[in-house]
Image (cartoon, chains in turn brown, purple):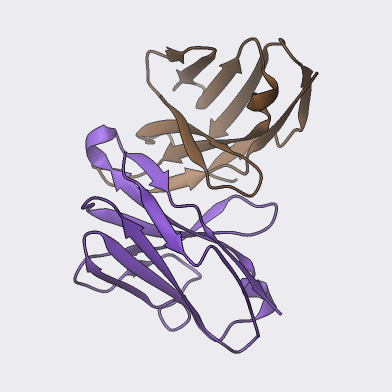
Length: 112
Length: 115
């Protein structure tokens, strides 16, 4: 089983729609969680960290469910500029160590 | 966050040759990494670049093929040696900011094509 699994999509949604991505991870000892955004032919850029209590940044909301070992990303009021690949990233390092595992990404296409 | 630059941004190389990629950071960082992203795939960690000592390589990557230097806290190089078409990929340098809950930032990448 892969460390981090995501639905590759693509998710095609109209502008203004709400879309949600899920990501599951296999290591229950995982320490920290992130969502990255990667535009075509560009480097990944940190979108947001995911905290245990959940967190929101504008139109983006991230949730963590440790019991079920998944994290989610919700995008409200989708914009054309949200079209990108969204990477789920999990730090599986233990004892304050560090081992980032990247999902393969979920592609989002927002259409007019 | 740290600003990271890489050189070259892209290159086309012949098989059997070697290419050295440079990564420069605008501030001192403890942890630097080199990743590879092959077409349609996610990122794969090649190695952790350790300042003043040998890099720590992940399974499947060896020093003879991917020698790494880290002479100081702001600079690192990755060499792709004796290239084959299978080495065609994007190579990314990244830095980690432990004080920011382990948020990681990436350079713009080097797009390598081996013919």
